[in-house]
Image (cartoon, rainbow, N blue to C red; front, side, top):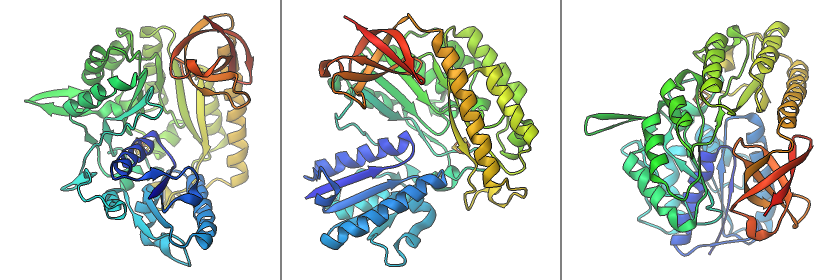
Length: 432
Ligand code: SF4
């Protein structure tokens, strides 16, 4: 029996798909290689942005065509979009056979013929699963939390993933130990807001800095520890000190700002203002020399005036993010902002989006130019898009770099001299 899994959205979804894949392999299933050959297709979906859902609808249409030739193929939709839309995904001659929302994922077990599946939820409580099949395990993702309590007014996550729950540290350490055999080089600790990690053990409170500090001293072969994502209101001084004093926690922080206008931040229910954010950035930069800060920005939130937008541009210039993931606002049914007045016209949203993309390109380029001539440590991840004689890797600051090299360098650290830039990607030369 052969399976095909497609995953959309965040790294958390990818980690959960890996866990599911482990269950399938453990039940004797094999990867189909191409979707046409699969007897079961599972799409693990994302609902955060409309564009993600549109892509998934496109894939459902694609599988409808495949099912004409292979009517026995079962199509299962799971994840956040399944949670949000439920059986609507099965309506109107849909090829979808089953829909399992975030809280019902374990029901997939019936389809894969496994009765003793490790439960994702027990008594309504999320259970974390080991998710490493060994494939590309040089770079592994470890969920440490699930859910979110923040209710940013534009975000569907708290509704489709539920409230925050922090994973037992002993379970996290066990998973870390299991990575030793894969020669893992980099781990990323995952959660919707890792900074609010809280676990009480024998009456002692363990917070995120305690956890990452313990992980940092435990792992021997893992040289890079990353974490995603940080809410600015919860990133503590203690965490900055922990990063500064550790050798294996990457000097890179992803710190979503979303807007540079206090008015819009308040409408977004982000619970920080630009003054707080700038103070935090100042502390981070002072205490962690060479740190790179990346961010997320939304343009065209309801009520965003041209002045609000310009404040976002000013914040970008002040902070000088090394990269930014930029989006235009998309109303999501079920969120508070869905009912907000003063929606911004699509033309304006897109215009503002293209302006911040251009601004970020300029800032990224200026920051990267300062690094020309430096030799940096690079984790080679794959071949480059263009050639099997070129590798694509990432620096500690999470910048992309392409350099000439062979397959044996993939999954390993390499010293690479930065020679030039193509767009915002470094072109480097391997130092043997
Ligand atoms: S912190 Fe806000 S944006 Fe992030 S997952 Fe929670 S509600 Fe969504």
